[in-house]
Length: 323
Image 1 (cartoon, rainbow, N blue to C red):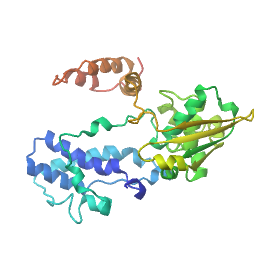
Image 2 (image 1 turned 135 degrees about the vertical axis):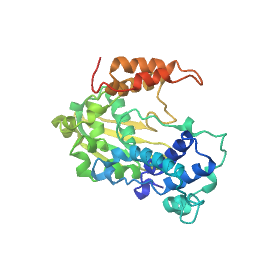
Image 3 (image 1 turned 90 degrees about the vertical axis):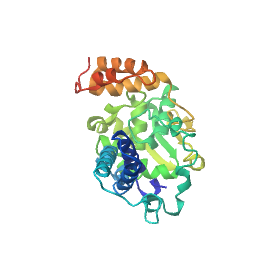
């Protein structure tokens, strides 16, 4: 419901979650924790228009949510109060963002018994999640021998709701002006996957400005048309599906159908894939040697073990150094 209204739930709800975590870490009492949640409810925000037409502000949404949550906890600790019904009240958080669709009882239902952590999705690719099934489809066709040079035209069929993010405006999505905009482009991400992206299929380098302007990638992206698909609509949002149909120079039409993208609950990443992603990401800040050492330290952790070893490995960075 957030997405349909252009609201970024991650930064809106994340502010409240960050406040709860910070308040507990600060050792606040129950009344102060409640106040922190109420203060945070007035701070959460985030619009999704950058997904469609550009702008890098969305990159700071999650960080700003964390900042706001910590600030809310500090304010509550200093004596700032909030309405006792800041969440469920007539003009509270739930109604303001969700209207009549808000299910207040769901907040406490099965509390302590049902854990959402088992449903966390780990993204394999550093781009908008709606582009992932298209990337999966392109990688599948690539594994079957389809090359970028073979492609005459392509049609990426997705759920109507996701089309508005990765396929519209069509001209802009086929010609992203920079690397950040490319991360929200169905045509570009399909092209990047077919032309040989890094990491688990595409990686951070694929979304630099230089590669986003690469003539080969732009030419291939221009051949990809994004359309809504009833089969995908029937599965979204429980699943994240896509169908990629490619017409080849030899006259063949090849199709890859993805029920749900890699990394979702129905297709979780393997331990090897998760570890590879961790090392790749950590290496960009810590260097390969420290990233590998950090991987080993994390895997060696036992319940309630001290975190001193992790702190030593993560204090300071080596910039872009690779060792």
